[in-house]
Image 1 (spheres, helix red, strand yellow):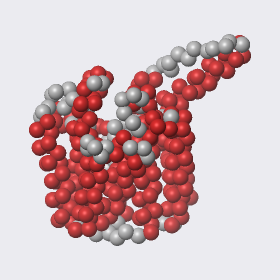
Image 2 (cartoon, helix red, strand yellow):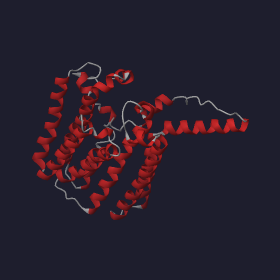
Image 3 (cartoon, helix red, strand yellow):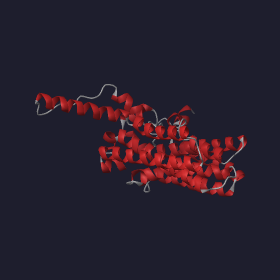
Image 4 (cartoon, helix red, strand yellow):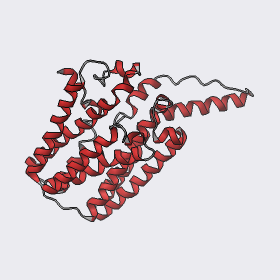
Length: 295
């Protein structure tokens, strides 16, 4: 039973992804009972996204000793069986569907779309997670924009210009989460899978991440102006939106800084080649730097 619970990988997302449906429910004025139901529904849905990802990645993960040793995919390690995982996924899908039907038909439609996208992200032959740009776009939709909009509808709210603006902001943040994860996992992904960052390269991935962060600030300031939020709140939001992606790839930035310093030192000494030793603690930074992207 414990290994089946590990398939949910709750520790990888519990501090981040539930914020988006929570924001939607609160903004729409949902009462405490409705908000709790929405959070329960999305707890099961996000869990499903990680379980279905583990299910379709089992064969790939078996070839990676580090992933097997990490215990994040018990199916790859042989500690759970495929039939049991299918039953688990069926249960995880059923709960949010039943809960959403009781709240709102329109909200249920959004829930269904969200579940289908979560499946298409990992499922064989479709594998949005391995398609150029589609990986980031689907990640932003299924973890950012759709949970926010679904929650608004589930508690009886309406979609407006303001909520669409915020959903675009959350979409960008969801894209950032995956791009940051791909930057950190660049070396590991090369030769084993295809991602947007393996296609464009690590440096271009960093530029893409920076562009998304800047765009998120623009949307945040626009939303703050529309909802007439204070300058302090707007500034704090902008600061967070710039700090979050920087923190996510801090290990990689430290590595680049070290290499630049080593190269400058070599140039000052007239060395033709400067060996770059790994940054101390890089592994710890890499493992914990961007844990929220679904890979």
